[in-house]
Amino acid sequence: MLYKIFLLIPLLFTAPAQSKLVKVKVSEDIMISIPKDWRPMDDLDFSERYPSVRAPLAAFTDEDRTVDFSVNISATRWPDSNLEIASKFFKSSLTNMFDRITMVKEGIRDVNGNSFIFFEFESRINGNRNQLGNADPVLKYNFVQYLIQGQRTLVFSFSCSRRDRQAWEDAAEAMMQRIKVK
Image 1 (cartoon, rainbow, N blue to C red):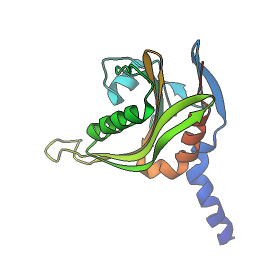
Image 2 (image 1 turned 90 degrees about the horizontal axis):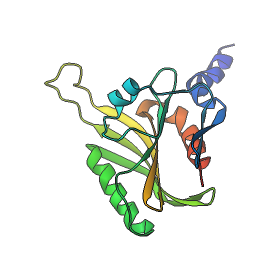
Image 3 (image 1 turned 60 degrees about the vertical axis):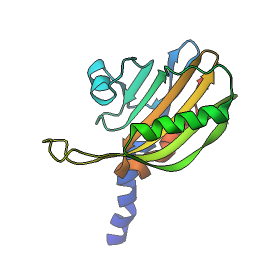
């Protein structure tokens, strides 16, 4: 009997990410897939977690509001399609956004006929020990893909807490592989 309980424990920790992915139309030319039980973020959700001048094209979260996926247009415009140089620039931007990053994978890959620059990494934002409620560091697992297309750069971003990485990294990979942009 005890061995059956141990067999079930891994299922309890991976259950959230096993949700079926459903297609969502972001715009006339962008289609993504997200877990079927996720919901769109409201303005408050997004402004609390992603303060930015630019509103996202779309942002979704799980029911616990701990795992997020967003689609945005970057303010950065590229005059050509030199993905190697763009990749270095985006990596530099990411390292400046966080106190520390540990790169898991990075590169350029084809997704449904488009060349995406991608970064899969763990991040750390140090806490401020002198500020109540903000003393602990924020540790995240992130998967970001960039698509340079004409005069715009699309940014597809997945994040969850680092402790939930194992439960969500396969789902994050599946979501990134199912992006369709015309």
